[in-house]
Image: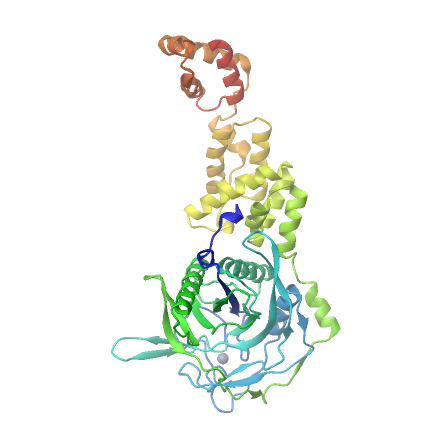
Length: 487
Ligand SMILES: [Zn+2]
């Protein structure tokens, strides 16, 4: 199925694209990175602030240990080298939401260097997107621009801990870029170090794109796409931008180094600002923060906190339960979903059955009702029992669908629902045979037509007989009996 996926590059075989991605992840710590203000989203403007995060002269930053630990967890998950002695640096620039006129970040050496994130290519092959680094830094505040030239500054976000994750330009098309971002997103959520909520800005991707003639050794001028807040928009934006650059190339137009935004309404990228080649941020080592040393014991302890990572879980699910790569990917997309699956499979011993119920009925229900797995009444134990009841023939699949919905909404067990509503499957041949005989006797005209060769009437008889059982008849036995009496 994967080979059917196409990208804009299929229409321009003489070109290739080069994509690198920077992601800013807001870390889910209780307090901010350098002060004790709450790290909370959605509060009234300027309520979670203090002299440190508002950049008052003389206020001294103190590093939040949790931020270092979360960065270490991400680094270990991505097979990065963990830097044992870490310093911070001041990156100078002036902006209304950055009152101290510099951002505290890390300089040339970051806490995590190198590493890689495994992804699938467009053909379903394995590929490792190499990371350059991950570093710790503080977020800036937020400007809101109103009408009449008035703007507001909210500093609640100033000092929110960020982890910036920077890749090598290793991705060749929009599909690889999306697969990288989704995999990284899943890993971050597994680690529990961020909500990674794109709508709320806790997972923000900046995408650098250039195009060049196929086989060229020199990269084209790169353009940065900023602030795109959904995976779907990211694909559209990259596709558009690659085509825009190729067409500029074809017409001999010069691509300028700039930052562009995605205009989703008009489905195009638009100019935001030009970018200097060597921006001089006048980096120097932050004098108010001592270096942070990471010893072997601390690193070893952090390693014990890591869950089984999604790419290992996916491979294990395929092997252990015999399910497809596609299904395994969906089941492991969220950690709680993967745990739910394994617990339910343990109850009934039918992992494929549980997989089908989860991916078709359960995810379908959650999507339709805009709910999360934790918000419904169905437990893994309950789903396991439902699959077992179906497998044992206690209920038929039509009835199982109704029971499933009731379990999701009320949390009742299969046994209780079957009992309350008298839903036990009628599997007795004698009982079903009497119904079949009665149905055929009541429809002599259709029986005659069927016997004259109109076999398309068979489902009609099945439907009539099923109606007589109030949907509880065993469909296999019923069809056998109908065939017997119609021949
Ligand atoms: Zn503060």
